[in-house]
Structure formats: structure tokens, C-alpha cells
Amino acid sequence: PTTIGGNPPALAAAERAIGLNSTCICDVQSWMGYSADRFLCPPSAGSIRRAFARCRAGHRLAGRYDLVHFNGGQTCLNRYGLGLDLPLWRRRGARLFMTFQGGDIRQQSMLFPERARTVRGRISESCRRRFLRRATKWCEHLFCLNPDLLRHVEGAQFLPYCSVDPELHQPAEREPSQQLRIVHAPTSRGVKG
Picture (cartoon, one colour):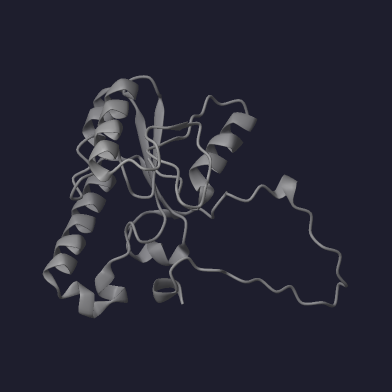
């Protein structure tokens, strides 16, 4: 239900390019402005309205898709790490996959030990661990878009972000002796450095 990093819409577009019937559905458009095939709510919608929209969409769509790929560690009914809809999708015959992208699964205790000792921090850690157990149980395969996440998600596979279409970008001309330089512009310097 999210377009974090532009990965879900890019993945759906790539799947359509090879002839698959793929749809990217998101609750609202993010502040980054990534596209989706369908947004469930206007950007001004509050969390309760968004939750109801996800529930309605999950109920309406269950059974209509052979494969469901959840992104950002979220499902239609993922409140407090419960992922209540995962078994429902499976009972309706869908194959389930999940992609974790960063803050959705990173354990705060490893990044911010002082936050993890607070009541809110302990609840957050507990919810993430509970959700990961449910995702591992019900999803056929788990992916991580950042390699550091693999230590948090046992058995997951690293899958690089696919939000850059190489067909749209041509490399700049440079001398073979020039060293290639790459920069990563993190969205959260406190987490990613």
C-alpha cells in the first residue's frame, strides 16, 4: 500500500513491459510524488480513513490476483504488526511476497539503543518482530532492498531498488582512466549516515 522509493510502481511497470497484468495500488501519494496505478485516498486523508480504504481494497481485491507483492513491510491490515490479512489472501489462493525497504523492519535497538529502552521503543520492536514472524509464515518469499536489512530478515533475498529505468538514462562519456564516483543521498541521515 505504499510507493516508498518508487520501487512498487517501477516493479509493476517492468512486469507490464514483459506482458504481465500488474497493478500498483497505494493508499495515498507520498510526499515524493511517486506514481501508482491507483490511489485509494486523497493525500489529505488521515490514518483512520487510510486504514478503512486499505481494508475495503483488500476485501474487494482478494481472490482477483494470483500473486500479491506487499511493499514497505505493510499489508492491507497491518496494525500493530499483526498482518491480519496475510492468511486471508492465502486462503483465497494468492501467492504472497513481501519487500522490506528500511525503517519498516530495522530493529531500533541496533540503531538507537536509547530509543529502544523506552516503552514506545519496546512496543515498536515487539510489533516488528511479530510482523516478521507472520510475514515469514505466510509469504512465499521475502526481499530486502537494502543489503543491511538481511541481518534482520532471515532467509530474505537482496533485491536492488528498481525505481531507475536504465532505458531512460545514458551514461556520460568519460575517459576509461577516470574513476566512477557514486553518491547515496539518504532520506534519513540519522539512520543511513
